[in-house]
Length: 66
Image 1 (tube, rainbow, N blue to C red):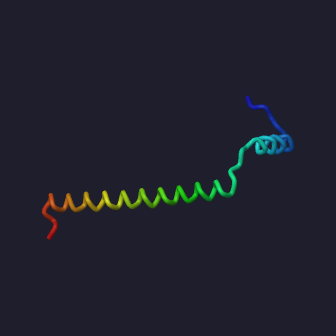
Image 2 (spheres, helix red, strand yellow):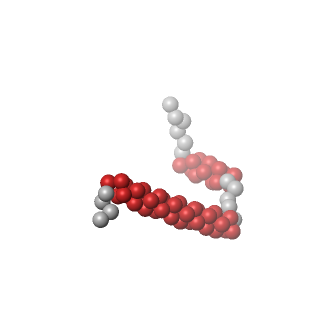
Image 3 (cartoon, rainbow, N blue to C red):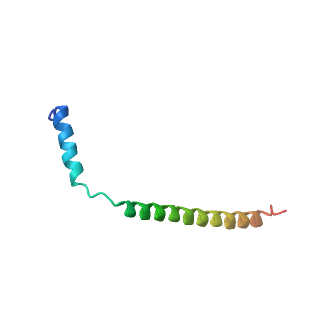
């Protein structure tokens, strides 16, 4: 059974926990965002190339190249 907490106590506990969090700096957030976007672009290019190679291979195998 869960203990009941009144709303005021809940808000105080949330604020207390929020102070314990180590928040990233603006620079760290920007660098991380750029890395994620860069890796997303690289992954999409890789998957596009793999898709094209497989597509050419399957068309050649099935004789659908025209």
